[in-house]
Length: 208
Image (tube, rainbow, N blue to C red; front, side, top):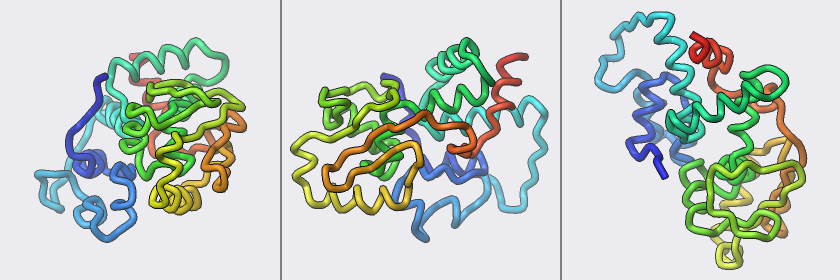
């Protein structure tokens, strides 16, 4: 399973947008993007002029970094979004939001998508009572996400789950703090998600 394993904060600085890739650290004064809001290897006064292609490519890189996917898999999501009815860009956003690791993150069970991916691959996540260890699994409307009994018994996990769920509340996910579970109640819309990238620029890039 291919996944980017390089410095997370460096990606935010290079792309010029805060993607909250480091979880709790991103909400503190230790956040590298807040301390050095300019590209790595450049002085803060350096100017960069990007071409139209470069601007479109940057939007795709933001989306890939945000959801933790590489080019081959991202291209598959785009092709699937193009086959579906409606706007391709909006369909792409919804497909990415339906990833199991993203739903685990959005529900508050993890403080970052990286941490969510680890929970899934290590077998701690259940979908409708069945263990699913594939981060790219697409969650459907009505699916109930829970954790293993081992994780549920940890007081530290439950404490962080409660804190994260308040911070990252999503209208399309219903969180049950008492039972340590989350229900994917409805498909989100593009306006619900408000992604930190321009999905239409990605569509234009792939259409060239």
